[in-house]
Image (cartoon, helix red, strand yellow):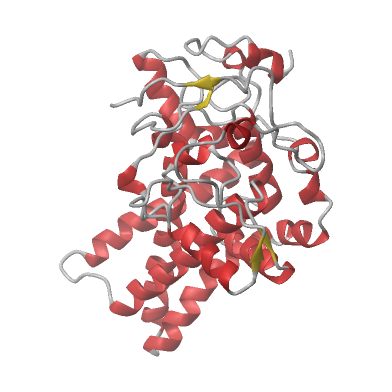
Length: 345
C-alpha cells in the first residue's frame, strides 16, 4: 500500500502499519552508522574525564565553538532552510559553501539529507514519516519506544528515502551531487581541521590531540544530538501556538533554541515550512534567521521568504510544496488544520 494511502487512513493514535514488518537491515549500513554515532559520544566521555578538575583550554573551547557554528549553520541555513525548503535563493558559491559546511556535520550527504527531511514534512507524524516519535502509537510504552526511534533508532532501519522522488532538483544539480559524493572526505576534513589548528596554535602534538577531541569528536556529538532532539523532543514536549496540518505535533521547545541555532522553534517552522525564520515571536532567538538576514543585506541571498509574524497565512500553511516541479509533498488530507493545544509533558 502506498504511503499516501496509509497516511490518509491514519487515526492519529495507532502504531504505523509498517511497524508490523521488520525488513532486514544492511550490515554495512549498521556498522557505519554505529561508528558515526558511538565514536563521538565515547569521545565526550573521554573529554569529561580529561577535563575533570582542569577544565578545557581556551584554544580548544574557541575552536569547538567556531566549528560548531560553521557546521551547525551549514545544516540549519544550508541543508534545511536553503536546500530543503528553498526559503531563499543564494549565490552559487554560497550555496556550495553552505552544503560543504553542512556535510562536515556527519549527518549524511546533502542529497539524502534533503530527501529525508522533505519526506518528513510530507508525512509528519503519520505513516511514511521516517522519524516520528508516534510510530509505535500514543500509549506510554509506544511513546517511549517512539522517542528512541525518532532520536536515532530510525537511522538503523532499512527504510530508504528515494532521492529521485523527494529531491530530483538536487540530483539535477551537478554541484550538489559533487558535494554529496565528497561526503566521506568532508567528514575527514571536519576532524583534520581542529587537529591541525590545535597543533599549529599550541606548537605541539598534545594540543592537536585535545583540539581533535573537543573541537572534533565532542563537537560532532553535541551537534548530532541537538539535531536529533529536534526530530524527537520537538514533537513530544513544548508548546504549539500555531496551527499545523492534521496529526502534525511539532512543538516550540525554548531550552534548545540557542544550541539548535533556532531550529527548536519547530511548531513555527511546521506552520510555515518555507519561512526563513522559525522563531515567529519577537523574543524567539533564531541565529540561523539572523545569518540569512545578513546574507540578504550583503546581497548574497535574494527572494528571502519573510512571512508575516502575526500568525500563519493559509496560503503559507496549505501551499503544495513542489519538489523539482512535482507536487509530491502534499499527501491526501494534509491540508486540514490541527488546532489542538500544545502537548505539555
